[in-house]
Amino acid sequence: MPDTAVVTGAARGIGRAIATRLAHEGWQIVVADLDEDELADVAAQTGALAVPGDTSTDAGVRHLVDTAYDRYGRVDVFFANAGIGTLAGLDASDAEWARTLETNVLAHVRAARHLVPHWLDAGGGRLVVTASAAGLLTMIGAAAYSTTKHAAVGFAEWLSVTYGDRGVVVQAICPQGVQTAMLDQAGPLKDLLSHDEALAPSAVAEAWVASLDDDRFLVLPHPEVGGYYAARAASTDRWLAGMRRLQSKVDSLP
Image 1 (cartoon, rainbow, N blue to C red):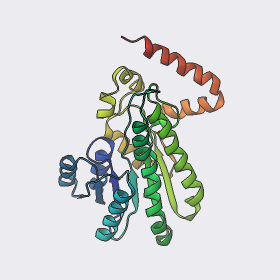
Image 2: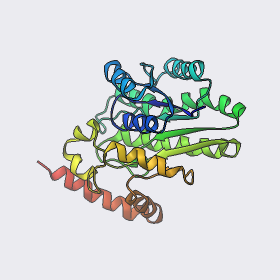
Image 3: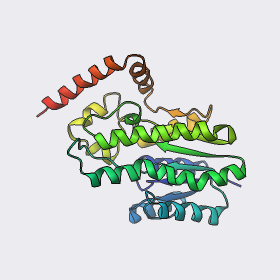
Image 4: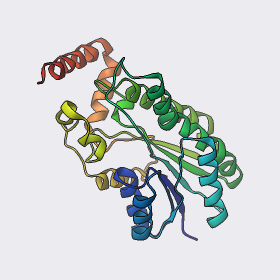
């Protein structure tokens, strides 16, 4: 029987690329997104089962997981890919913070609650979180996005520590700039995020496929991020000083 994957945020960008890559390999796929029209197009192109809905809510995640198990009897990989963000800093409203937290963090928690018991009974499963390089470093200007992506990595680490020896593989995909609508909407940060090349979403999907060779926790489509992350840990004050210089450059842009 083919492996089964569930992909959230699958209507476009990285989620769509992952669904397309898995379809090429003959997987059974369930795709989810709020955009029903684009999701239907992805399903038509990949042969996936489309489950439109809000996967940031407990009811939405439960419905998605239950539908996948009802149709295929298994979920081998769950891609918690849906994510949102704004460029707001301290001016971000409580509502923006709450929505970003629900989508970028609590959606992963809720997915794990519903999936991990199945995986423990079945002997294994895999949760893949799209966390962004912002979850390892930070993203200038985007307070809620940076904070929640750090939290997403933190939850993924905890999940790996807690269940990794019981068959649950956890991974965090952490790209920098990717050619998506989110990058296009980044305004003056677009060039900064593309400094080490803005990758096509398909390249991110390929980086995940390559990670299966060793089941590495951090999937880094931009290898440079590993060096930045190590430098941050080795000399945090020096790294912060460098980030402040980048902030000053952004502040000076017209």
